[in-house]
Length: 477
Image 1 (cartoon, rainbow, N blue to C red):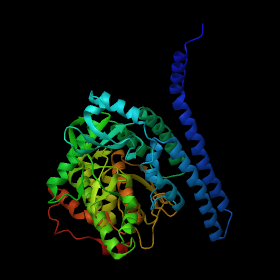
Image 2: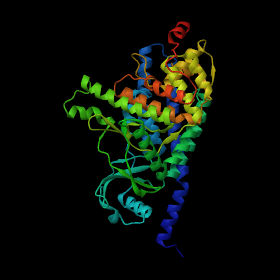
Image 3: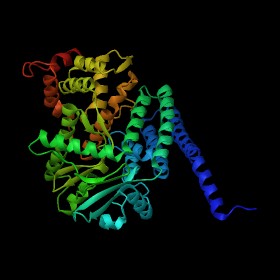
């Protein structure tokens, strides 16, 4: 006797769900091997070409091909690969062709249908949709890999709010993606890159698991909001206020902040008759960047608890130059010893102090090997590439994995997982710096905060008595 049509469909759905992770893994590996293989072939071919301009043209063509393939991988698979696009689509890290393609993926994840959104909200709050909201915009303001955000108005307070709703089933797919990425990282660090990529992916796995708990996110948002309030006469960035009683693991309701995405800042300036490349625009951009990085310096070095996802989609510009920092799914609390060790490194980088840089890296478990004669200099340059936003004159791309990188002379055998969020934050801040056409050193800005942290911990006695050893060390190296 044939099964009823409903049972047949249910069986198909169950089988599809069971094989979906395997199908997704296969799609990733086919595409990843294709991208990796095409670059290795290009590397081999350029090795036989003597003319520099011809080699450069070959690489530019390869970057165009690779950018399109990477865009297809990230946009079609979504999930964790949209987060990868946020990291790789930085003007200081990836080739120009990659940046142009990947930067368009911010907030471009497929959205969950409104019927499913209504169902999730009603189940989480045990109320009907119409009891909660006066209106609820069907089209999301933004959609990312884990959740999407809608603008709405509460019946209880007549206040416009942002409603963040988790994509059903996203967590399982993310875990599949991270396992594949970890396997690929192990391969790369064994055969191509002298860096402990696996530890970075382990920390990423930990952070992603946290992102699916909106109750935790709400607590983090309130903690950072309060910390910045009490630490400043006026907080350098705006943090959305959580709406009490409107928090669950899968739905988070918060204050709606109106602003211009930082990616659209130049366009907005042009609309207002301001030359994006002019002096007035440069002053505005400098203030925006200064406020944003000040907030991060205080969070990381003073409190040790910080927002760890400053990609352009999470930053709004309000009231001309005020900065709003959104999305607190990825936050990090640094252990006290690591926070102080990082403070020591910040001072070393700000002072161009090579010896202190090496001591600081050793203090937080940064293990390296070296084939360089000038090991201290190469280690210092590697530290700048990873932990400062400054760029040398005339340089717009400063990747730790570039051909001229110190990683080719100083390999990183062990990188503390706990420090990956700081590394990622610095890389994203540098991407913003380059994207805004500015030159800026967060280490130099953060030096007074770092000194205050070490002074409070009893690690240094008198800030004024310290003198940087820059000129002496520069004569030696």
